[in-house]
Image (cartoon, rainbow, N blue to C red; front, side):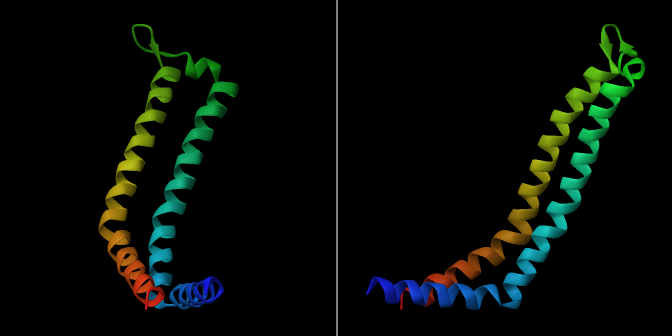
Length: 112
């Protein structure tokens, strides 16, 4: 009985994974995740490169004892939270409704 259920689950999942809705869901996820990941990694790499090969620039005072390196470091945290917020909003609006529908379809097919 358990083996039969597993086969049904596998077949159901495979069918859903081939569906246009699932492909669209993956496309929307990738359209957000890849560009933002590349942008963040480039931004982080800029920080590391400047810290290693432009110490004069990084030690430039901005205000009082606050220098460019500290500002860049704090902006790393800020950009992380901004990207997380944007992804959360994107997922809630564009991914979750489709994923919920696909999950309901899967559960219905498996539990018949």
